[in-house]
Length: 270
Image (cartoon, rainbow, N blue to C red; front, top):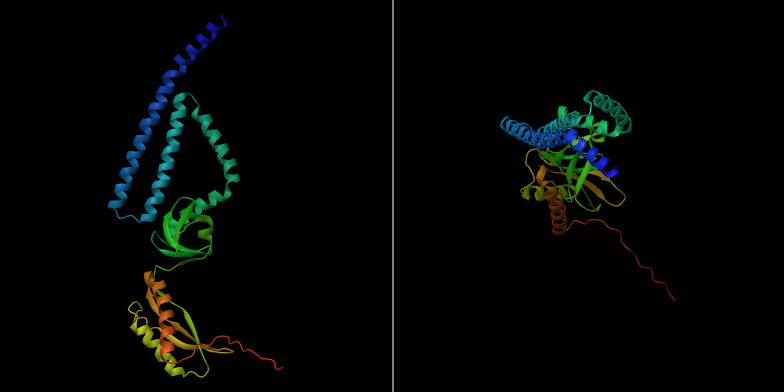
């Protein structure tokens, strides 16, 4: 008798909830497919309208989540969950989660601010929160950079939007700041000529703006020169390392000494 009772109850549950469950599964499958098609259409429209790549990815991500939340509510309503009470639960849960995840909400707000004011876009070389890298992705909560050593850097949007951001790509060119020291016996004009010839011979150093070559400091054991050529953003490190090496070779060839610590050996008599 007990077994029959369980069978009857199971049958009644299947009859009552089976169609709803099947309908919910079908709604989920069809709804997911529809969302996919809608997102695909929006992506095509944005591409055709030449939307900024950063804004496009951000909006698509946001729209996808909105549609998924709506679909979940519809599926739960189909199963029999009261959507009105469910909405109240969501509101209460949202408040609790919001208090617990203030940082995440701040990151979301930071992402929105980045999209509105556009201090950078995908492909820009930026510096923020002590990190330097090329912007790879701008997501809802974080921004991903590819570091100069090809490492992935993930920065929360809240911290990034509230801090200082240096965009090296916006102007298209960068100044390379170099300092070289020569001995006090060196002729200043001759030394400047050596630096100028090195910069003039480097194809990646720009003629305009003109480079700066000047005495910056009379140090304890050297006359220090600032050498500041300009180059395209993508040529920065080639110019930095290339000019440093070429200056050393040119100074040696001109007989101009680069000071360095000397060790004096004192011999004791006896």
